[in-house]
Image 1: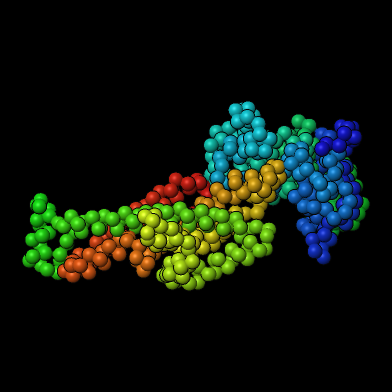
Image 2: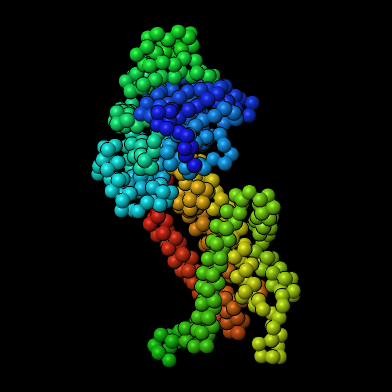
Length: 251
Length: 250
């Protein structure tokens, strides 16, 4: 179902004029942004500004009311959307890790490629071991999520997502539930990915991290993108008063 | 008569209130054995059927069809809010009248569902109604966010149900299921009312025939059910331990 018109020189994720309401509450009021292949973008903003809703719409966990979201040419806002085809290309990591508690770390990583992509168990296991190594968890393969720290669980969640070989990764406030001392190990794993050329969309409150890894930063407030720019200028030359106020509270 | 049988025979002569007749009279011993075997069969079959009813019913309760959900709700309310003894009698005496009959020997017409059959049906539906609620509570205890993660990995509804929801829900349900199955085993005694020759029925028959055996029969009943339920509980808690996930739940 991949749109044959799409070529890698076009934006990998293209969001245009997206509107989304929950009941009477309009959380997205016409958001547009493009993410090119290999680009890392960070979305920042106060709580309730629609950041999480926006990235949940990208892999169709939430539906949108109007507008368009295209991932590699696949229109998400399409009643006949092949969700499997979309989600094969889009990985997602959640704030609360959401690992499968009855499966070991290794089984968590292996499950989707075997059950969803029907790949052979041996081949998947080999890849899973490599991914566990990549997120620096060698020795924890047979631990259950309940036996791991928050930071370790979150790195398993990253490996689990990568096992599907996605083209773009969504990170939804992935360090917000972590102890301060484990935040860094998760950020390092993401940074490693970003440097490897993975296209990433991050919703985050880690300003230092955003400044370091992002190619582009978007500031959202009350459902719209107020301001955006590359980190070099975004933090120093913000012009909108709302951005300035937010930054002054956080930095 | 061997020494064991002789001892209880002598005991009955010297202490007529303690006539352990089933220990020295082979005919009575067989009645006990038959009763015990019937109780075990009834328990095992009803446990299996009631668990199947529970799983299917819990699925039906989450179905899209409103009719299906209403039917399930009606079924649960009916079986949960009425006494199992009344249900047994209703099934056998009322519904039993409408079941077709056949004549295996060409002469006597017998209903195609025997009293044992009705006991199995009635008790399975009775315990099944509780199992539906138990499994439903287990399914509701699986966090939406865990299912969402599976969805984000491309799993479809059925895969999420089979690989994520059921294994987790089942673990949550086990302690409550345990309780309900214990109740079920004990409730099989009520099949006595429709003359199912299970353990209680046989023991009462024995002391109706030999009134001096009454105390001995009561004693045996307590002992037998204590042991039967004990074995069930032991098996279930072993299973529970075996399925426990390190670092998850209580």
